[in-house]
Image (cartoon, rainbow, N blue to C red; front, side, top):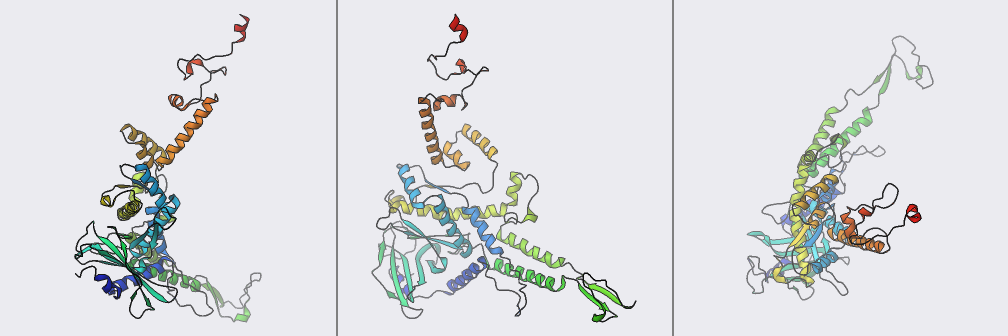
Length: 501
């Protein structure tokens, strides 16, 4: 392997390999399939109706996978460390609110589902910015150079795209060993160097624009992960594999043929024998009279209900469900919907392929999210570079399937008795512990304000009462023995008999 300082110059003039070119073609085909841009299987003559029945099954597979992975809110928190609140506040600002964070992650997962690999670019904060910025990169623009003996050791990222002025731009982000040794393993003192090149059109040599930019961190400004595991390869497996796309095309062909058959043969065809067309009037408000006994008037009807063709189309859909690991019930197909009350175990069995697939994705995308979070904290100066690999980042994923809230609340009470923290229980129930803590504090302050005005109980006394309102006696007066105040004589208005005495 050549020294890494010589590699950017060779990569600058290199062309995509056959594997890279084939992968780009597959990604182009996958994006067309996702957007429903299928070629019509039947030719349509001028002036005739279009019988092509296009069914986009690929978009449902991708969208449902993204929804299961990043459809609910993902909480990103630091582990136990000093300055936890400051680090949490920085992570919240870096990732944005729930809507912005989950939208960005959904776009990332959609790229991965279609192309097999997801890429995020981390941009340092510019003038006036407080946090680094994340950019979801188009996998079609990125090439990855890995070590031949270790596909997980990334040597360089190559980003190439056409500019609006007719120029072709290329950026190479290469790993560099400060000791100028050959890169053959990952080391914490490695840095990255960013080179920029340009050329006129698709021909000619690449020209370096400016001096290389030093990225003095052990991590690159680009983070990537496989969409699904693909051993011995740097590029992961997409949700939309070529066989699934071809099966969708075949389904469209079968459905289009059924559509054309129905157009020509679904309506009965009336024919007559023994008479001429001028001898018969079959208007709706006229009486049909045949001129001789041998004359006949009959209908030609389609003898088949196309059950074999419809069955074959159903088999194709089922095969796509099995290969994509997205069951029909997850896509809302009514014929596959269970009837009656379904237990939690039965629901898990029905969704088991999709659950297993999503858990695999959580491990891959989760590592990327943790790495990006650590890198952002280093850029922000909140943690040192030395703890980049070890600093804990916790991800709190929500349940994949709908749950019975009453059973979950009962389970939370049991977990509390076993010593589980309130924050963990609230997260398991789908609540944000920080937000709930602030809401509880605001409620307690309001109760104290009302108590100072002589209304209600203070928070501590209300907890002793079980949250109930002051008990009233049968005659409408408050009973003195129910008072939460201890050691304090309560005044009351004397009754009429006491006044007379």
